[in-house]
Amino acid sequence: MVEYFIKGGPVMYPLLACSILALTVVIERTIFWAREDLHRNQPLVDDVLELCRRADWEAVRERVRGSKDYVIRILVNGVLHREYSMTKAMESATADEIKRMRRFLAVLDTMITIAPLLGILGTVTGIITAFEHIRVTGMEQPQEVTAGIAQALITTAAGLFIAIPSLILYNHFNARVENAALNIEKYTTSLEIVYEKLRQTNTIKEGESS
Image (cartoon, rainbow, N blue to C red; front, side):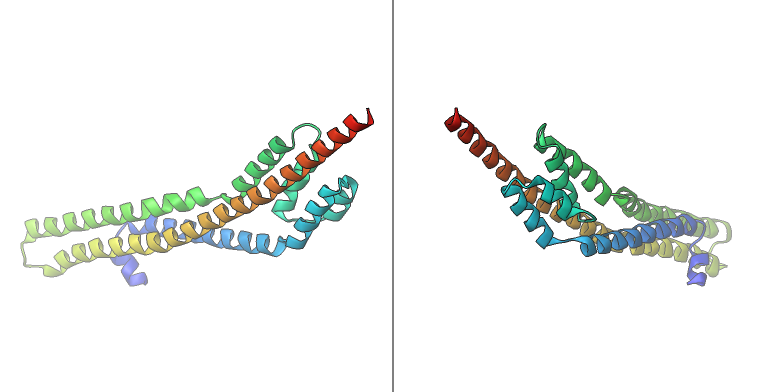
């Protein structure tokens, strides 16, 4: 590997930096989603919705204490601001959660774009070097020509080697974000429906009592 790195020429250094950045983001996001999966608590989400149906808001606060489930955080934010604007409160909390889930993905996306371009740059400089040697020495020193061609091929391969796995993992992380967003939408909509039913029921009761 070291030999190939040296043969790839100076473009291999920025390619190495791209690979380190991409790998760092992949590791960080993998750990992030592993923790999120560990903190998910579907029975608790169902319990919260049931308590909201009973309008037992104090029990909701007690039940969710210490929870790190992102769905719970969003629902609780809606419950706390139910007298003002439950929908907007949950939208704001959702935006914060989605932003947290997309953290560093822009860096990975940039590496996917830059790595092949750097590989092409190395290809161009390698071919230029090869032709320059041909112009100066002709074919008397073929090893100099093949060195330029080797540089061209190595940098191209390195750029693709970085970009292809990064693209696959980038799409995977994006899919995780989209699935989380759909999950959030499902439960926030359920809470909005539950609360609207409670409001309508209370309005009817007030009308009957008057």
